[in-house]
Amino acid sequence: MGTIEEMDEEYMKALGEGIPLEELYLADSNRIHIYRREINDIRNKYIFKAYIFLIISICIPLILGVIYVL
Image (cartoon, rainbow, N blue to C red; front, side, top):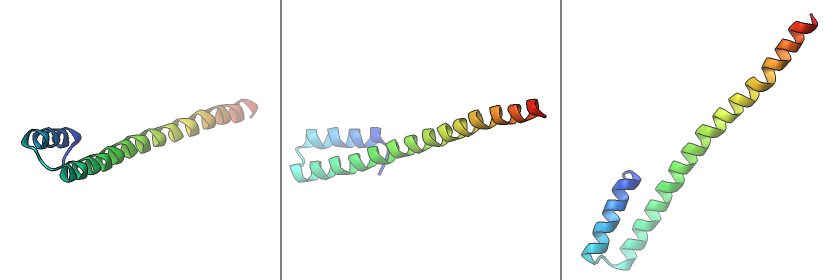
C-alpha cells in the first residue's frame, strides 16, 4: 500500500482500463482503510498536544499560586 495520492492514481488507471467492479470496490476498501489510518494518526497527534496544553495550563497557575501564597 502507498500513500493516498498513489492509491488515487492507481484507481484512476483502473477506471481507464476497464477493470471489473469487484476490483474497484476492493481498491475503495483499501483506500478507506488508508484514510482511516491517516485520520487516526492525525487525531492522536492533536489529542496528545491538547492534553499537554491542558496539563501545562492547569499546572502553571497552580504553581504560581503556591509561590504567591508562600
